[in-house]
Image (cartoon, rainbow, N blue to C red):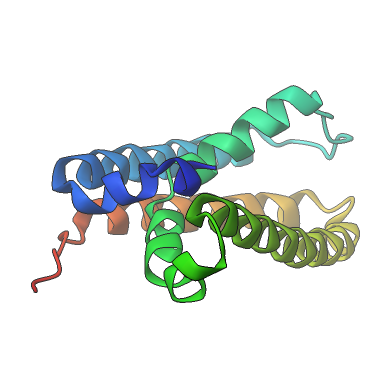
Length: 158
């Protein structure tokens, strides 16, 4: 929806907007990583997972996607080649392509969820394995956040 509304173009065109999005996204990844590491430290026994309300899950997923500049860049770098003024309103074509992108994402993310479920059952009941997994998860998230903040923003030159 952001791409249809033109927000992706603003983020890519404005170095300040892109940098702000990148910094907030990197800090959010670091926050999630630290949260995972802290939960690993507190883990003493395997307990059933806390089921979050659907609204919270949606809000978290929305935040992650909103703070991901790669999505904006993808919509501006890849999708325009499939949009043509002769085929109707650009916004409707972009919307349809965005919906196809979402459908493909649901398929791939669904497979990740199924795979994660299988891997989770392998870890079930083993505190040391779950702790190691959370430390690894936290370390990866912190590392990605730091990498996001450390990489310079390179503007394309014409």
